[in-house]
Length: 137
Picture 1: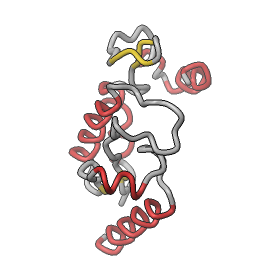
Picture 2: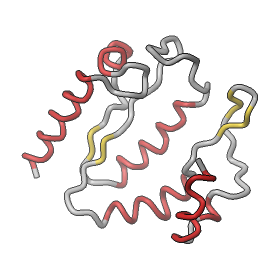
Picture 3: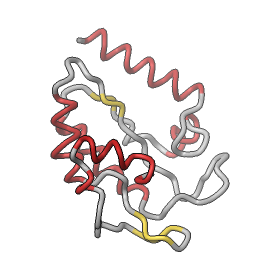
């Protein structure tokens, strides 16, 4: 992913956030794993930009179940739920958001195809929640 985004990151002056990282979370299929965006990058660059957008509604993420993969062909990284820390930061810093972090195992299976990608019911649920927030604004 870094290779694909490198030119853009250089243009924005952000490449230093992505080079020489030491914040590895776990090993996944024999490779050291980290989140693409560090907490520092999110906090220092992304959140300040998002706060400039009037009436932005952040759609959070749901936990990933380790005992269910849906239609995905392999297990997710053991540390994948650490992404909920960044999600929590986003919801703390942004005014309007839709939290999915408290979804139960049953809801995750109902609304996603593989823990991560939403199915039709999941998109309908999120769309309904967005409309509620928009009407409240």
